[in-house]
Amino acid sequence: MFLQRTEIREPTIEIREFAGEGKVEIDERILFDDKDSHIVVLLEILAGDVTFTLRGPEVENLAKGSDDRVRLYVMPPARRAYDAFLEIRARAGSRFRAMIARIGSAFAAASSELPCRACKQICKLLVSTVLATVGVADLQDLTPGDLLQITAEQSYELDEGLGHAGIHGPLAEGPIGTFLALFADNVRSVVWSSLQTAQQVFQPSDRIYTFACRRLGSCP
Image (cartoon, rainbow, N blue to C red; front, side, top):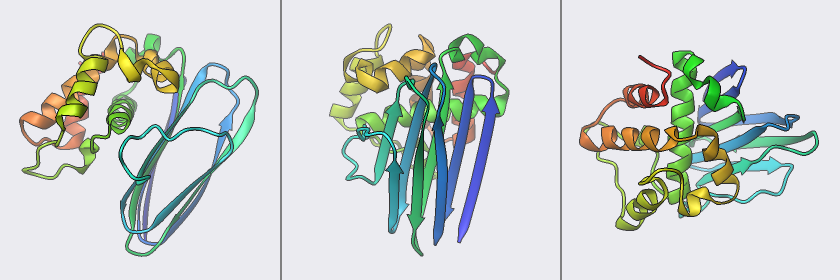
């Protein structure tokens, strides 16, 4: 059994990330009490038998083509306060990742003031969310010598959504569209810079997101 938990709290963001192996049980409360914040929940089964149960609002899994091994839930600001609960039950021999994030509407204006660690987590969340939406594997899963595998259809969706000024196509619609809008014009440069770095030559994910932070304006 192994469980790593990372937590970041800043005025405009809150991120909880979990990486687990083996038999693990997690019960996390998600509080919807902010009329100006989006909640993003990204869940990934990397190996074995893992059960994710989200108790609370009825939300659609926005991850594409993953057979429920990747789940992405994006919840816009709540009109009233309420709770949700995430249950994770992993059996022996399994591996998983989970991320719960709260992003405030004032994020874009304050992004340049984020400390480096928080900036990298935000870039990781943004890139992972976009890739899950179009069905591309997470950059964190690349190993030395690997190249990111993107089909022609996935490449077209990314180019249609982020290839020009603004956000277009399915990425601009519904909860994912309002979430990506929080990043203003930076969403395109952050995602493309991460993908190009991963495609050209294998880089540790920390370095990939360092490059992305420069696009976001948080790193020198």
